[in-house]
Length: 318
Ligand code: SF4
Image 1 (cartoon, rainbow, N blue to C red):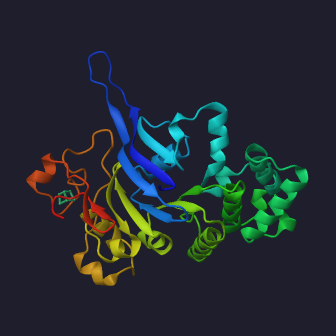
Image 2 (cartoon, protein in one colour):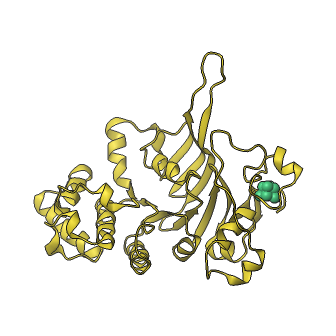
Image 3 (tube, rainbow, N blue to C red):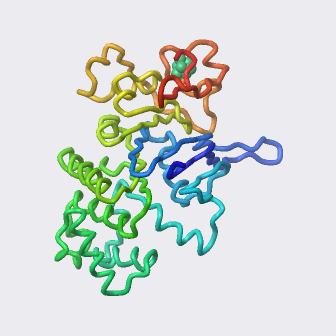
């Protein structure tokens, strides 16, 4: 049994309609399925607006999905309510893109971490103090600085605090939503390395979300590529980046300088923005931007198919 099983997850937001007009929906997530194994890092890539953050929020139960199932260690997360739901939150945590925005500027780091421990653990005051010191060390911060406030730390240090907060209660999996996008390149590498070290020590699983395929390839064992609310390709990270099959994956890869230059002969430059999920294109959702689109692509939606060991792709041409 996988640690996390997500099946046909949908999140639709109502968007107008009335007595005489048909109801309309923004289909932010439209049938997303995947599994995450214990201690694994699964990467999720796609442009902004493709549904990555909606998926993150649905997994954290910050958004109520419209349909589908989320099972963690065999427990149906969507069936949990009240106290059971609150207790379950210790098993799954999130690291945010902008740690500064997610940290209360009036609270010291000690108070931030203690709040998480009070909510999700039975530790007494002395136990919490010991755990806070341990967490600070684990993320490379000096425990003596625990009484400082967020503004007294650099961007990279604040992200370390966000990681410590997520780790406080020994979660089984963490959704890291663009955790390095706001950081300098040199700091990005430090944070990615820190996440890898933490995974080796604790066995926590990550869903690592980013728009940069190079970062995702470095940290993930598998990658999923998302476009307009759907997964369009998935597979082992090295294979998928060395030999992308879906035209959208090829386009994302083309956009990363210095990554797999041997593939650049197939360069696909994406033009235009991701279409609105309110009126997604008919057939293959990528057809309005795909240089290989045919008439069939405009009318018939390609099914997700297995195209090799552990690899899936939804494209009529693959
Ligand atoms: Fe392009 Fe057609 Fe494949 Fe969609 S199904 S990615 S439009 S070739």
